[in-house]
Image 1 (cartoon, rainbow, N blue to C red):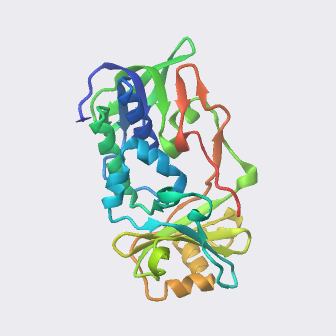
Image 2: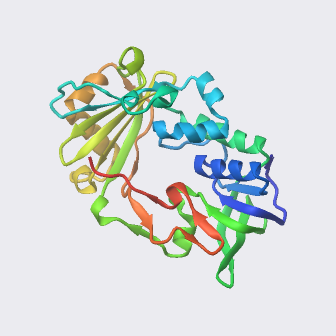
Length: 310
């Protein structure tokens, strides 16, 4: 159930963040008889980047019981990834069925606001207590052990939620990583990213309609091209910040400049209209020196984000 009022309570597990990682863990634990509370500062539906699921999520989605809903959804089915060199020369897509047998050789391109809501609803159906609009101020420690969190809902006074285990699933906010001073940059993975959304971009036919297309650019950078529902395409670039922001620090200027430079990509977008602002992250990669301790653990992007150079 979703509760939007504060009251002191005790749980087996308190999860900071109700995204896919946090709700999946809470769902599994709740089904095993452990009382779970998930706290999320933003309200749903909410925007999030990261729309292209990999095929190895299939088993987890199956265990969660989400496959029937995904099969019935309007999310494009993803069978492959296609890499396009700067020259634009065509190469054969890489089909997941080349290395994975059966239905597990496919996945989905998801609209994250819908997918995250699907995961949240699934957790609530399992009995997870969810508090939306509850911002965690800090994790509480006693004698070196995590014993709960201090959170605030709206303008109400802060409230303690006690737990045997605290799970940080707060994504890039890395609540515990920042509190304990564990989060670090990774100098060897200096990458930034800019992205936006287009309507009416080119799509391939048949089984390739839902593929992820990767357009390679110089300086070991690349564009993603992800087909989403309702004729929307997610387009984003990953490259070194020195390359992306060598001429301007403005996200939109840098993004549009790079789209214009990538000939194969501009061909796919020649009849498309950009329908969203340009968003970005100046430093993609980070890692926590420690991801588990006495009474606490980090999962998902809260533990780290590693985006390797291609």
